[in-house]
Length: 289
Image (cartoon, rainbow, N blue to C red; front, side, top):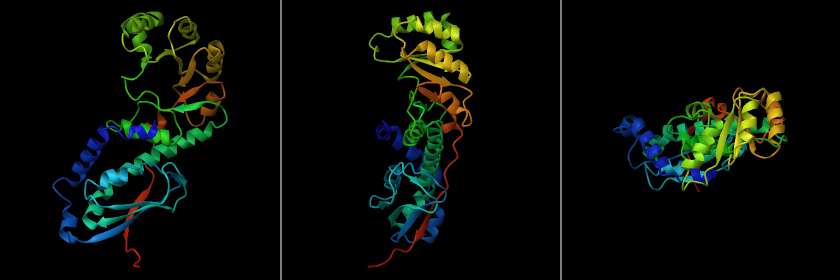
């Protein structure tokens, strides 16, 4: 699913918006100092240990400035790379390299930061059988890139938006008058969309009992349960449905949740609290001959 996310047409629009807000009417400093026909080369240097993510965006950004930028990737997408590693070099028109620099770095630094934070959580629960899920707590406009980066980091993409999965939460249950009523209402209105999975939020173990009595539910989410209560809920479900723990989960306690037998643990922090990885782009003089 990861690479397919980058085929979304909205990505090109996002890149063009990012370039427009940075370049505007032109890169005035480069226009005043760099001859338009001069060429240059640059290295992308990783300055922190981390997971490299966003390399497929390099040609997408650079081609908006010049069609013939040569890009040489030194590592693979998703590699765990130590600080001090050159991850890519680029050669071409100097004005294009300098004009694209900040936009390219903004993309790959953010995406590498999300992938790195995600991998920290994935490694934290290794061996438990549970999987990390991402959430919709993403930067507005960056949903595709944030979701792509979490998948590169080893997480499983949850629903991309409100349109691709039925997720009955507490407010839906309140509005419909109960869990059973909400589930039945969904089935009655899902004509032509029967392939959509239904997930229902449980606020306590009584809710778990009621959800198990409903037909056509694919996954149950234990919301703000303690690890012990999650374990009890998993035992009640007994493999009949997929199970997910959500709410109040941190890096410090996530392994305790993962060891309950849960299928998935959703973590908003891997996107909403990710810090960009430190990457620089520096010009250099390529060796001749």
